Length: 404
Ligand SMILES: Cc1cc2nc3c(=O)[nH]c(=O)nc-3n(C[C@H](O)[C@H](O)[C@H](O)COP(=O)(O)OP(=O)(O)OC[C@H]3O[C@@H](n4cnc5c(N)ncnc54)[C@H](O)[C@@H]3O)c2cc1C
Image 1: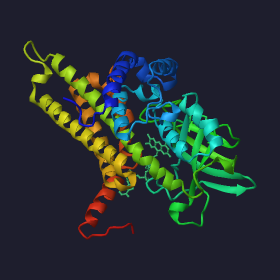
Image 2: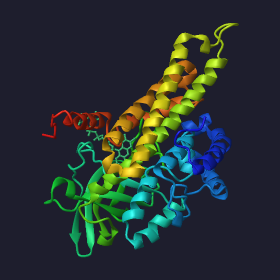
Image 3: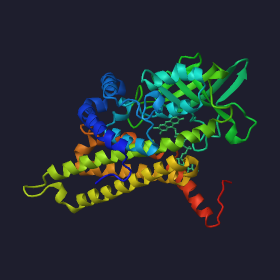
């Protein structure tokens, strides 16, 4: 059966991308590659990027004038699901977070000189970038509370601050730093986004923060950063001064579709591993795991949950394409927490089905279990999205639960 949101372009593209991911990337999912830091597998992934370019599949998410296909968000979501079936898919196609978000942001809001110097090589996959907003001292769930400042001096901004969970800072060429530029303005108009070259004096990558037993490096890392009297030209401002939160919000709408479709790709692959194992793992001469009702329950529930999540996310993407993210806020909140939790339930069932093997790094599941737990925290913790959605619903019933 044809997927509901299929278009001429997805019909043509998805089989080619699926074939590439299965033939070129699945063989790289070895115990060694899943256990070592990312830099171990990176050289071979760089070679695979050249194959993507040769196959004419590079930059799918980009506008036509930059060699892309102008895919709608709904179309790109479907691509994202296929890429996510391998942990290397998005990186090899240069559609990995946070670079894809920075690319979109800079396309719309960066001045020409920043586009020439940074956006072009970013789109070509020659450099990487990161987004530095969250601070250890303040609740990231309310980012208007922020200690990092950018003070004007002559033609420059002088930036001071402390950040953490700046994903992929290790090896990045530049950071998009969120800093308070207008302390007297209303809370949502105080901060701006400023491009800071990684080699600017005063920028220190203090450490890659270990996550669930993984030290992390290169693109697959989350860094703690210090900015001490970092001086950058005021021309490095992205968008207008004081629009930092507005731009961050704008980035998050499409960003959540990207993440959620990635979650669905991971859930679908975990489901596939679970089913394959269920039909081959013998319990005795007559029975395999799939004969057991508990395992059948895992399979039936997972199938229903993945399919329901996909419909919800693609409907949301479709509505963003039609009406803009600002008019689809409830759906964006809904998909973020529901899809992240669905993915984690499916991975968990797949691990349970594999028994001890599920805990090993010989197969993908434990890798995803460790790395994807964060999905319930970043881009808005579950609880934040749930209360935003509930508040919006209850408002229609006459209860105004605005923030006190
Ligand atoms: C793997 C990973 C990658 C990340 N990458 C980046 C990045 O690249 N750049 C960047 O700037 N940041 C990044 N972050 C940070 C992320 O955006 C924050 O962790 C997130 O915004 C939550 O902020 P916090 O951790 O300070 O939690 P807090 O805001 O302190 O919240 C802690 C917990 O309190 C609860 N809570 C919070 N608010 C509410 C509420 N209103 N109602 C009910 N409960 C609530 C939630 O359960 C939440 O998990 C990343 C985080 C992770 C884990």
